[in-house]
Image (cartoon, rainbow, N blue to C red):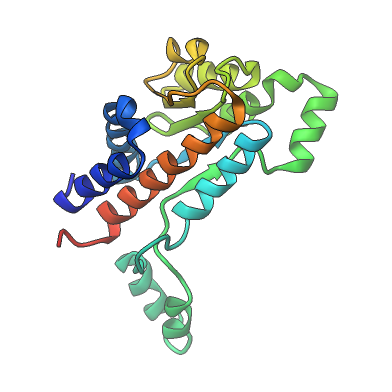
Length: 217
């Protein structure tokens, strides 16, 4: 981890001292995600209701610039210049570096078809059975820790050789025993758990962006 990335984690704990109890878990989640993106693997995120919105929020922060300007991959830039020399500069200037992340809560037609035709509990797991590769990561968000469709997703992700991060609350015991890393923020009520999830995943996004696209100054 870059020194500047480490300082971002320390800043989170300073600003939100309530998260001191999960500092090491956030650090572990960062390292798992860093390894995922370093090897060209992908992150998948699932959750229900407000957590589904959080999943989309995280994808938005990872797939484009969040805090700092991101340059695109040099290999892509080179290929664009070779293939489309007249348009390359315009295309390159309109792109930003991305960390490959996907929400499992956004495919409306697939979600509703599978829930109607097969089994609502398996809706996230079904997608992972088609997407997930060994060493991909699933981030499973559930404020209660007992959302069965999220638990099934963790089980299938693990069976397919993936790694799992659970983002939950104080009551998230069902998730704790099933995930590689569990960040159980110290609140129990749904909205209070969600209020702490936001700074956690914002900091993870900032740390990852800095690690892959930032300097160490």
